[in-house]
Image 1 (cartoon, rainbow, N blue to C red):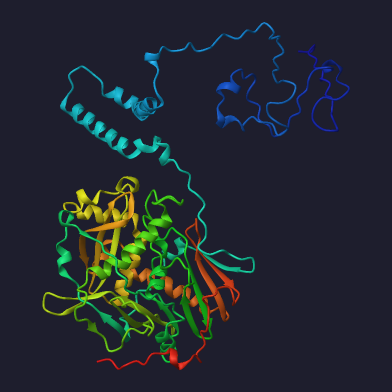
Image 2 (image 1 turned 90 degrees about the vertical axis):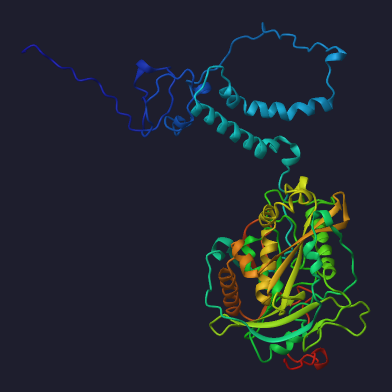
Length: 556
């Protein structure tokens, strides 16, 4: 085609950036929205984006210069002076149609539950004849709906929606304390030390009374009142124990009590805060506690889904702990044959003072040592509560503990008076779920002491509104190792935790340290503290007065 001709368009080059230049007069006075070279062009007009927009595409076509702003944003400028409000005043109801506040709240949970399960209930409706398979399916669906209502129906109750309060730490952290390590529970749960052998018995002190087997026949129909006794139970710290002060000169390099070691071995189950003092002197390590430490306090429903509230009521976590301590002070002594002949060990109770007026409780102190490897030998003071005659006439050593019921409706547990005799396994399973840390500590103490049995007493309030009067509803016996297997308690993991902590502190310089459980997180936190941080830290040197050390008799 000889007549074809192509005219090249005029291209205006903007040397200063993107967009039109001042020379393009044909687009003059038109609005311009700045854009980026990397922006995606996809939407031409979106009339419903602000109402039914897809959130997944919000960032897809968004410009880096801003979204929803600029020259093309719609602005409503109509005059609204002609707009009139509609009278929405509610007409007063007659007196017979009014509801009181109690009546309104009475039917509110049923209405809310009905709204939640309305779609499921509609699906059950039908008048046509259904097959056997469809009927079975509907029965399963209704069974599942009733299960959901039982589990989640009370979530509309405002009393169940209490916000979790910030727990206070077990000890006030000072500014001059230095954090040297934080260990999460997930790391501790993976540890294991399976090669710990049998312990060596160094010495045994104290005397034990025999268990009264009549308490094994107690049931909810023949309950017995819990009585108070004035016997003394000594809670002596590690560094103030005169026997440990004597043993540390010749045997072992790590020293502690069974309460402290069981807390460390089962720490991954704990929820509430606690703390342990660690003193290092040369090649020796002492795991100790403060005078007002929470180690000796018992917890109630610590591992439950809904733990007790932390307020000043009778059923608060603090008051329930004090109630549990009171029960466990009296119950192990009540079930013994008091004023009868005792089983005496070669050495008397080392903590009895001449000026004490009250009788000492039935307790035996066993000082035992374990070889943890790597030249680490730990000496632990273990306790036992009583002795009983076995089926073959042999003497069996026993640990006795009490589980207390405070309010089955408020705690979400089973009612012991109606379930304990016939469903004791279900009651114990609920306690393992709600008090897993406490039961694990008790079982670990019984294993460390070498007890033949551990006895649990079920103690309940006579009136759930009175925390001072209690009754014994039953007893249950276990072998410590079998009960540990039943509750999935791994002693190898516990020894692994102890060994890791011992190696950690052995690698640190001499001084005072504080091992704490974080009040809100599953974490152990270790502080380096000054020497005068706690008043309980007194003389721990070897040159103590000989008058403080008891004279040990040779064992038979």
